[in-house]
Amino acid sequence: MATTSPDSLAAGRAYQQQLLALLGQDDPAEVAQATASAVQSLLKEAGSDLTRRPAAGEWSMLELVGHLVDAEIVMSGRYRWAISQDEPPLLGYDQDLWVARLGHNEAQPDELLAVFSALRAANLRLWRRSTAEDRERVAMHAERGPESYGMMFRMLAGHDRFHLNQMRETLRLLREPR
Image 1 (cartoon, rainbow, N blue to C red):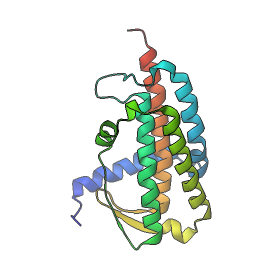
Image 2 (image 1 turned 30 degrees about the vertical axis):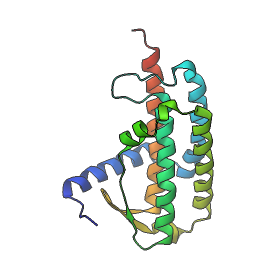
Image 3 (image 1 turned 180 degrees about the horizontal axis):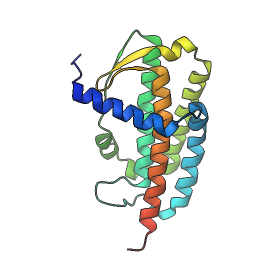
Image 4 (image 1 turned 135 degrees about the horizontal axis):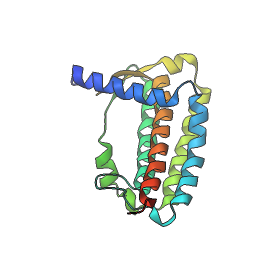
């Protein structure tokens, strides 16, 4: 495995702290439980604006949902590797390439939401049955270094909040008079 550079580690730690700050002291399972419903409401609110981008290089509402699905897919594996293996390596991924190449803007919103909801429910069940020891188990992220299952789970709850806020801002921008 390639060594992680000090700059990459510093950027990774900053990213961790950003997401953890969005979670604050809230229960990550409660935040995670509420996300699918919030996404569903925002999709309904978006109406015909689902595939419009607020600016060049920005994601549409549908692409944001696709990204949440991608993150849930990736984290599903990471959680299980961390719990079941001893310090497994975790690859990073280029989220922009995933969104573009997986064609999220052409996807059906109900299908994306169904995949997200099913994976999220499975991951919440895993969290609820995990032990304190499970939550301390560490995997080695290629860009950020060691991350425990508990840290990853809390980060994903912060990630949810980040992208729900981004979805709200996207809708605001799309509806602003031009």
